[in-house]
Image 1: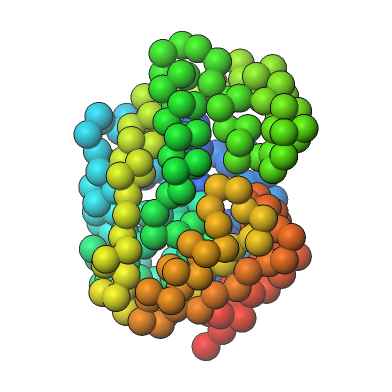
Image 2: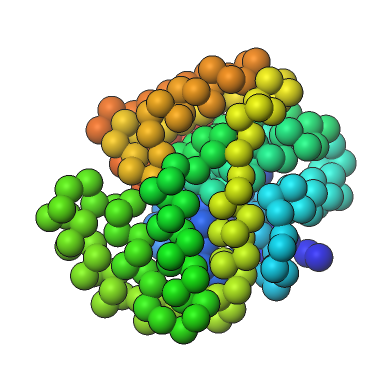
Length: 250
């Protein structure tokens, strides 16, 4: 099945595995467009989303295999890969299962597994929306670090939910179910591609300890943690594109 694929920018190719999206389409939302645009100033960005119509029971290994086939078909060999958030989970799975298509890798705002907080938030969100209920407010614990900000984001996301509904909620539900059991801790030593792990000090979806454990578990892992940065703040950090370019510089 053809993967949703968007190209922009100029320079050396960089395959970007996109973060969690309600719609499995090539069109990024405004916040993601900003991040991809900044990367496009330094690379020929190939932003790839997961295949629409994802069936129940799909695993992260299945999704990685689809991406490996698409990368090999397009490039004929290994390419540099950046995975953002859920795309970082996929990047690790891709490098573990299909090292022949990954030359160097950046895992941004992601780690070898989800935290319990993130797993529960994604599960509640996707299950509610798939059942036709409001669900976006279940993501508030990943946005607010204290009771006041959590209450604010809960109300805001509850109100915004109808505008965020995907045409096929089962796509994101089935991806969340695949990521729910994702845990590559024991396989990190197998991943021998040079890898940069990038995270935020105040990321509520993950933790600095998880970022560090991921980098330490990789044979050629390096770690960058942005002081004071949230989960989304990692990708919007003023150094993000430059740090990626510096890591990939020949």
